[in-house]
Amino acid sequence: MTLQAIRYERGSLEILDQLLLPDTSQYIPIVSTEDGWQAIKKMQVRGAPAIAIVGCLSLAVELEEKKFDSVRDLQAFVEERLNYLVTARPTAVNMADAAARFISFTKTLAAQDSLSQQDLSLKLIEEFESMLEKDICTNKKIGQYGGEDIVARSTTSKVCILTHCNTGSLATAGYGTALGVIRYLHEKSKLDQVFCTETRPYNQGSRLTAYELVYEKMNATLICDSMAAILMKQKNISAVVVGADRVVANGDTANKVGTYQLAIVAKHHKVPFYVACPLTTYDGTKETGEEIVIEERPATEMTTVKGVQVAAEGIQCWNPAFDVTPASLITGGIITEYGVFPPGKLRQGVEQYL
Ligand code: MRU
Image 1 (cartoon, rainbow, N blue to C red):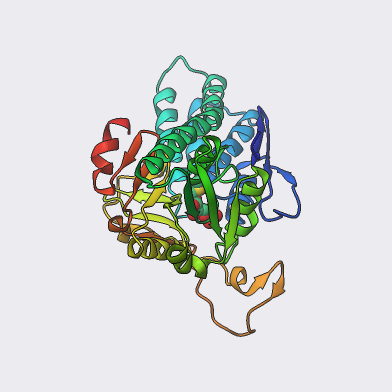
Image 2 (image 1 turned 60 degrees about the horizontal axis):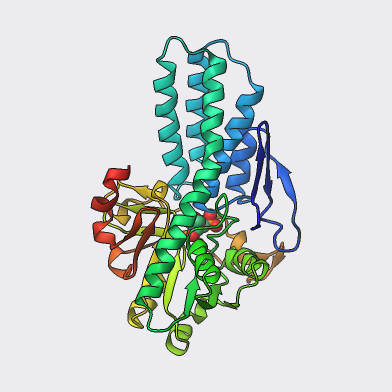
């Protein structure tokens, strides 16, 4: 049993408040899309796949309660709410991908004269619910493809992995993406050690990934973000594996700020650098990473820790939440549920599945 960030049964949604971890495990109820939007914005739930799942399930619980006069009213409501949920965080594409898919799904169903608003509502709720199981299934495939590729390329029988941010059960419906690869290696007794970065300023690594790794009893070690270069010089790191918030057509990848510098250091030390993500993170509408909007977050994430000021009062801050790693630095490949692709071959490789 892995940690559960999202608890759902029809009509009821609760999320583990990730602002309180690791000290306190507290689930909070989400009863509407407004609650969902707020929880995503405040990062009570975070991680690209989890954002989309919680966003859509918040609409599922709202639809369970709400009555509509006509199919058209329901369709307009669903479209407006999905587009609203997309605005909570701009960089991760999964919520935008889900919104586009479900808006089109609703439109197709609404065009069928025989369908009542109750039928349409139920079909939508069922589709949203299916995201939970699909995500875990996808992550397990990512874990296996990535794990096998890393082992095949390694010169040692057990591997040492460095990861960044949190891509585990807390960032997905379960199992995880990059952390799913690590989990797979652990399950197959192929993992020697995993290193995780703190991931400043929000500490997803030290608060969340470290929590998951300890919970799973893996041989895990925390480093500060600034220790990555010495780690790759002195320890025998087999691969760096990170998640993604948006991968564009040429393979450029937006992920948690600090990913880009890890990829540069990995290339210098000839350590394969992998990105692990589901195809819902692929954005074929953008050609290069230049087109990705990078979210900037409040200065207080940098200047305070648990509400205590740790930076000099009056200092200016710049807090981009993500950076873009150029495809040329993704030397290991992009691990998806359909296999591992060199970034330049991703578009061609996944087109048939989109
Ligand atoms: O700001 P966050 O915590 O939402 O950022 C999360 C990341 O950057 C993850 O690496 C990414 O969303 C993939 S999660 C499977």
